Amino acid sequence: MVFKFNLRKFLISIAIPLGAGGLSALLTSGNMDIYSRIINPPLSPPGWLFPIVWSILYSLMGVSLYIVWNSDADSIEKRRAFSIFGIQLFLNFIWSPIFFNEQRFLLAFIVLILLWLFVLIMIISFYKISKAAGLLQIPYLVWLTFAGYLNLAIYLLN
Image: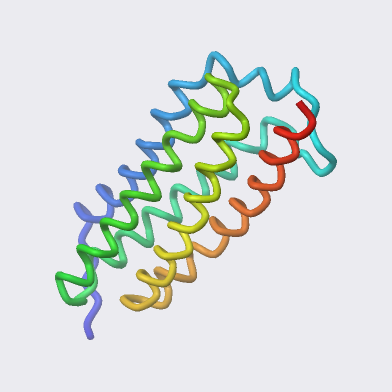
């Protein structure tokens, strides 16, 4: 297999998750201060760390999406991977407004569990197409596991 770089596909692949994350952050920006007003569990990172981590994770999502899109995998397999990617990105997108705007911490935790499951399915789907594309999503799953701890603890403490 010869790998050919496609700049257009790469830019679109990066823009999709970064755009979704940016729009979600924009929709919740007026309510992000609740993080400093609620009781936070032990190991809670400072608020400034979240945009850095999410920017890295969205970029990794984009790179993985590009690898899958640019691969010579079967089109049915690619469509399945894209569908799973879209579902997890939608769940990721709605989590912030539920958590920050609505302050419905339990519902946000339920969405996070679904997100975690779909990211795991995405990792498996991507891995079947490209080991690198799947492995690049491991940090995302680890972060979501930590976010799940924070979300559940915030629900229980508040």
